[in-house]
Length: 260
Image (cartoon, rainbow, N blue to C red; front, side, top):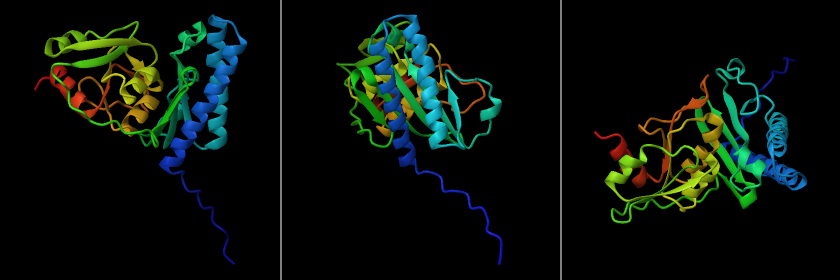
């Protein structure tokens, strides 16, 4: 009688990973709402939110996907454990922690999965706004063309508005809506509240991985400001800039920023 062989378990499907990302983003958000309601505004709430959301989310991922690697904003940044990882979860347990500490609603939870360097699934929760979106079930946004007379509405950082706005404003009318937190700005595009999210002040992979996954699921284009793809799973998780928009708007903006 031959010895039994160890058969590796089948990997979860992309839909299953997206569903898990959604479940964990929602659960982490619920934890943060409970903590917010039990504490007064200030740095203590902010720091506790970062720490408790990180602990909860990372433990949950290790329980559900024990062989996967996790990169969290609040975790260790040593690239060695994640270098060459087949399946890498990139999470921001509390995006917009300062706003959370103050008691505002511009904060969220990001959960994304990268497989062999490619972004495949993600979810963004905005608990204080009652919003939750994942890459598998998000509603696609129609790709309407740019109206040259109306121009564009662009969401930008409250603290670091991009200098590229001047160049856009020279090409067509541009209105800006300043918001905090990458997930908040991305879902504003996904929901059709604004036409584009433009950022040039620098981010990290945990800031933009889950928002990018949800945006791509909605049919939007996500690149750097020169049109190159965003990197994921790099040793250095820094990312200089970002552009998220529906395809027609994305093309119109790149024609201004990256003239041929």
